Image (cartoon, rainbow, N blue to C red):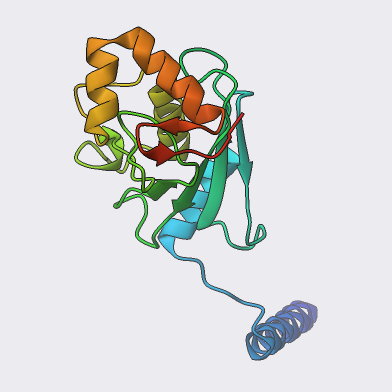
Length: 193
């Protein structure tokens, strides 16, 4: 008989706990506190928490940390043609990430064979070579690599690519002019040093 009372008492306690949890969930739903995250948001949260950025790269969240799907990276190359410059990239990540690469734009106008004057970036892992196993860290290192090793063989800015290929000293001079806020040909660049 005593066992029956103990079991009954335990069952009543469990019932009360379940009722309390149900009540808390209903209150949270009414107040809009429960926001279901997409798989893309969950993966991006993981990627950002595991970032291993070089000291030359800084991440920022212009819309606040509640909007992880839109962020910016500033790259300050510490070697190569672009040494001393600061280049800002915006990242827009879709809710189906990582099945689709992030959309990346260079917000700093730059004289570069792989970045056009509108900020479009030519990086194979942002296009045909994207695979869901890649992550934000991989993209940032890819962007950084564009500044240390610009590629004239796969250009968006064909003029810059031709100068890099045919006359690297002239290319270096043009990069410096652009980063100092001057003209290269008919195109004016804002200072980014």
